[in-house]
Length: 199
Image (cartoon, rainbow, N blue to C red):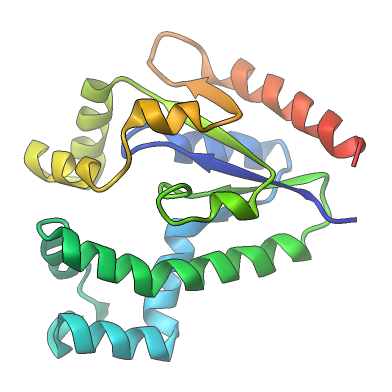
């Protein structure tokens, strides 16, 4: 039996990785799209060639992809960001689909910031959104990534508006440092297991 395919998304600094870890503790397999994309950058020969062709041969060093250089290029140029996404998203979607099909739990989770932007929502049965106020998200991202406020805001602009994103989700987890996150996850976990049992 195929597992229920559930997306987990939220804007930068929303805390979706923390939520994903709670689901993992509950025994739910989680596909980390960000980690998988980083792996594809290093291991997929065609992608590597395409990135060097479009962004310069020096985008790769002996240590691998120069991420800060690539980020500097794409987050200040919407056309370059669109180009990068066109190259990367189809590979990540295919990789996630193959991974999900190999799992044998009632449901699986694909954690990805750009589920709607990348067009992968149509491959999923349900989507969980993680929501946090903008000022908290900016602060978290600055602390986590050691970047400036301006850099965080530039990345936010590359994602669809948070309010629109949450309206597209089937479940919402509020991660605003007021409500406890774990009880919200447990409630959704229970509901997803019930839905999966009826498949």
